[in-house]
Length: 249
Image 1 (cartoon, rainbow, N blue to C red):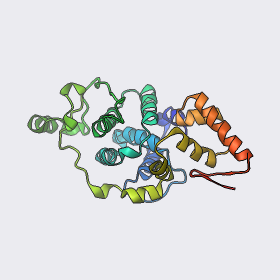
Image 2: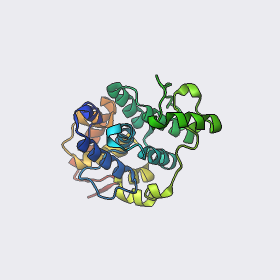
Image 3: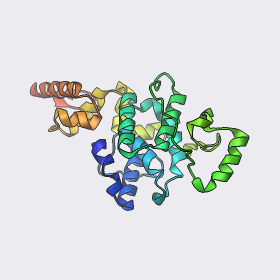
Image 4: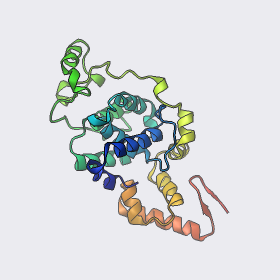
């Protein structure tokens, strides 16, 4: 799935189509209430971006899943491809404008692993963000009593109390169950989150993919994408069968 292309079409989709997209993203990340496998699971980083966008669409009534996303990021952040997520987040805001829930997600990641996510430096919001605007007055009272989520400064713009998101283990599949379901993440546990790991998986499933298509899909620069496609082509020309973990002869 090419995220840039999808982002440009989100405002043309019906509520039913957006809900189906959310189901695909939630299944990909292992939200426990989504057990039916989609025909085409999403890229993990794209799933994070899309969930962050869709939970903030009032007509879909998905706001309750913002807490589940925050829980996922706190407990599964080690499985994410840092550079790819940052590129996808930047592309999302370039297309859709300011995304408070996505910026909050980046704050969570930076808080959980400051070294890995040190380049995640979200700008302050242009206007205050309340996850549930109808409860704004109550939220302001709670902020005075307990402070801000993640100890974020008030000028960051997030009107989210410290206790807003209570993690519940039942909201997510266990890590073992998630890795059994999601091959992309399972391979990262073995090989680490890398462009090569994701590229090999894509080229295995889409052998006709060009360097330009690979570059666009992964948001990887053209030169390394071209090199990866050439290496895989050479590998195949020797009679080896491409797999994400190795080969058979």
